[in-house]
Amino acid sequence: MNRRISCLAALLLALLAAGPLFAFDYGLSLDNSSTLEWGDSPETDPELQRDKVSLWGEQFWSGAGGARYRLLFNLYYLYTNKMAFLAEPDLLEFEMSWPDTAGGGVLDLALGRFRFFDLTGIVLDHGADGAFAELDYSVFRFSVGAGYTGLHLKPESDINMSAADWMDDADDGVHFAPRRLFEILTVRFPEIIPRQKLSVEALAQQDRRSGSGGTLDSFHTTLRWDGAAWNGFYHDLSVTGAFNLSENFQGLMARGALRWFDEDFYGSRAAAEFLYAGEDFFTLSTPTLGLVNNPAPADLLRLSLDYSIRPWNRRFSPALRNLAFSAAGRLYFTSRRAFLGQELEGGLIFRPSADFGASLTAGLWAPEGGDYRGLVRLDFSIGL
Amino acid sequence: MKKIPLMAAAACLFVSSLLSAQSGGIIDEILAENEISAESAAYLILCVAGEEPASRREAMERMRDRFARIGEKPTVGEYAFVLQNELGLPRGFFSTLFPGPRYSFRDLKFLGIIQERVHPGDRLSGERALRILGRALEEKEDRS
Image (tube, rainbow over all chains, first blue to last red; front, side, top):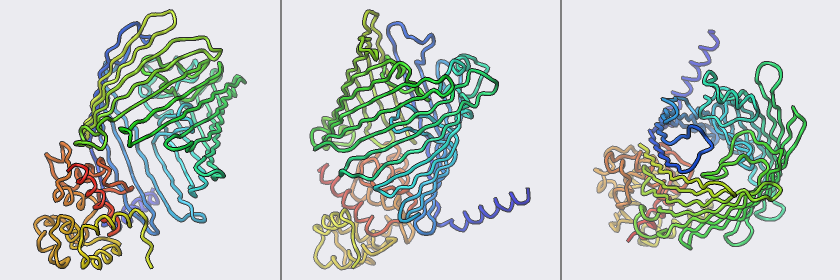
């Protein structure tokens, strides 16, 4: 106990000694989301109203040799039509960055609660408690991390991998997200061809649910090739294998995207994308694959086109410059190419200043041989 | 010879084009400052405002009221605050209600004038101050 107090006192003294280099920033953000739906929603009790108040803070300081340290937190209070309230820190992170480490690389370390992503952003995009380290030599990058999801509150978690997870999701007596531990290792290789990046990733996951039976351990591996194609065009191709180690089956996902950016042509952005997921493919977290129709990435082929434009880019006041219009069309098939339906989406994003933003999005889902469903969503965000 | 990064050199050229030849030596000295002084920041801002002072001390004398709450070594946030006021750069809602370094920093970050990975409380080098000033002038020109 005395040792702990001594350590804490030493840490406090060290922090006070570095006082002049300290800086603290903080803020409050308010987010409101209102949704209007038509047609039969697959959810019995859809979330139509969502209000979130977040208090964030950031403490940062510099050390010897260009080292930088940051302590970040974000504590939110959430109210929706589905639940009275939810309060939780979704970010509680200590970051360290050391330049010129291990032969000239930049070493970044993170500890605490923060979001983890995999190379595709589809298999894993979720908050967890853990650690992450990255060594970046500019041409070569290596990162390793591990996280645990079981301390997150359940309503804001979207990890539902097994039948037991889904049962817990429906049980009001269960308050925390599924207890899953994962480890992720990513390597980005040196560019043999200029501006072409090749990366590989391994993601292992263990189900820490107590009791026997119903557990699901898994392993995912991804190969990704992305980079510049030609003037203003960028490509992104990846292949991911998913292995269910508990039930011994595997699935495959392939994804390809061609993106185009042209700031001079009214800040235009366009993307053509395909996503193929085999019947037995599965992910750790639940990705968003459509505004109205959001299927799981399994037994699916999705073809999509997206376009956004800022007509007053580099003209007039910042208010008009940051007014963007977007449109998207998506076709959905099964992995054996049976047509499932199509979705059209449109949006208007308005961000006149650093402290205010609003967006209006709408979507229409037209399934093959079913009733149409529609959705309109209005979002506001204020940062104090 | 000290190597100046390409962006800083471009910003330096852009700002220098607005200054007279005699200020070139002072600009070189400011570029070499690891932590810019309030006098140097005042000098830069007055120069681009078209009121070129004879020295940095004179610049500080003329801008003393605007640097009243700022220490001898302004932070990025404090520099953003003075720059926003002097160049009349666009403000957000809360920056208008509660003017200060904190909101000015956010406004300039939003406008893309501050692009570096910095914090409002960070100290500012002469090179970075010049880069920020160059982008602020571009923003002002775009709007005029």
